[in-house]
Amino acid sequence: MRETFWHVIILLGIATVVYFFNLGETQLWDRDEPRNAGCAAEMLAQGQWVVPIFNDELRHQKPVLLYWLIMFAYSIFGVNEFAARFWSAALATGTTFATYALARRLLGSKIAFYSAIALSTSLMFDVAARAATPDSVLIFCGTVALMIYVLGTFARKNGELRLVRENVWFPSNRWYVAGMYLMLGLGVLAKGPVGFLLPMAMIGLFMLIQTLPSRGSDSSGGLRGTVLRFIENCFRTFQPSHFLRTLWAMRPVTGALLVLAVALPWYIMVDQRTDGDFTRMFFLGEHFGRATESLENHSGGIWFYPVAILVGFFPWSVFWGPVAIGLLKNGGTAMDRTRSEMSGARVSACLMLCWVGVQVVAFTIAQTKLPSYVTPCYPALAVLTATYLCQFAQSRSKGDQKWFAAAVGGLLLAGLLITIGGGWATAQYLPSQAWLATLGVIPILGGAGLIYAMTKNRHQWIVPIFSGMALFFCVGLFGYGTVSVGKEQTSRVVLDAIEDDVAVASFGGLESSWVFYASRPIYELSPEPSGLVAANDSSWSVRSGFWKVKARPSLEQFLSRYPKAAILTTEDYQAELEQRLPPGYAVIESTGYFLKDSRIILMGPQDRRLALRAKIESKN
Image (cartoon, rainbow, N blue to C red; front, side, top):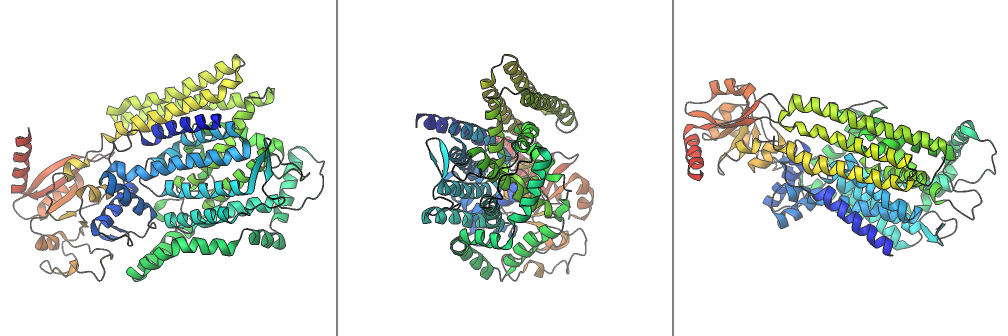
């Protein structure tokens, strides 16, 4: 108990520093963060909790759970960046402890401790933890559901792993079953059916493998024997009778009823209040569309997710070569065939590989690809990596040391590439932030520390040294680096210059952050002077439903309804806009366009510019 207490304290400290430090010190990053945060702000302002609305239009891309959480945070902290990101960080903390609890039951407290550290100091997981997106919510729901599954299925007795009930690979206690399915129901509210289907596929595949009838001993060894057994077992695993027995053991009727009880009421309400628009656009457009075609140019081949994980799970991903070799060397992950004793490492490896495999294969098949789609499998990657490192720390095998040395070489190379590549990138795009390149020194120093531990035969130092390096790297990158880069986001200079009662439109492009920081809907103007209807006809502003997409009037149409409006544009369109604006309009404010060779321009009546200048001078 004392060891667990200190593990909890240390992990809580790490989570607080990595996830919360300077969390609200940067503007929301375009484009998803402002859309989610802005949707919650608009729903809160309207006093309605059912229909997701952003920029005065239906936001059909995601379900409602994230918006509810952000709305709750807004009511406590106010409408700001910290509140928008608070629940992502808080639930990432929960995921960290769920990973610890899951790994502790399967593998013991030491591996569990380093599993949680590996997760909390991996790049893509930290991105999810510090962003106002539904990824952290989905990861939390799925990880907690799998934690409940493990706690309800397995027990530890005298340091050994046992099934709670002999030969039963699914929780028999109804409270564990209910808790698991209720969490998956919340996952459906967080991101749709994948919040239920993928975790159940992971558990189902694991059960299919573990309950596969034994074929007796097989003396064929080596890599060839392992591959042949794997191919044979793949066919046997999905035998129809075995598949149906396993599916029924998972209590699918109970699960479906509980998931529907959590998620279905909101889906029914939003369907009714939007005349079916949300249901059609969310399920057909977002799910079926993303699965069958590449949307928004987010495509990639079979290589996409291995590369995404290699980068996203850095720095821990440098060990994935030795981890894979270790898994192959062990020659399988099923339960030991004696049936009287289980290897916690083998059972854990099987579950984690099912976790990773289902997630990666499912989204590799889907045509639309984003690195964040596989972040829910990062807890499993963390457990596999921590298992390898803790086992290596006790190993004296020359073969293991050779592969470990190769991983350390990869870490040193990565540090060098970060230093060189970071120096080049900042010189090209952010010359005032050249110091970011020095973050590459941290992995180099970590690699040097690992080499020193190896040469001094201090294997017990290896995991603490690497964990400390990963912690410093992530805090430097997210706690300081993003804040430093965020200072280059200056669009609020323009948006804060817009008076509260002024209508706003954009010409030549629209960023989500403009809508959030303008705190009002922004019309996106049509580039054609003729527009939709006659310039003095305002029928374009009439919609059949409050959630419907707004019309795109011409500049002339918009000004005929809002003659004192503010117009947002960029330097590229400024000349064209000035030719079409009525007399008396001028540039009120301008600022740099983040990471683009242009400027954001705010244009409005000349008297507003004079009033703004007088206001600034009075403050000074």
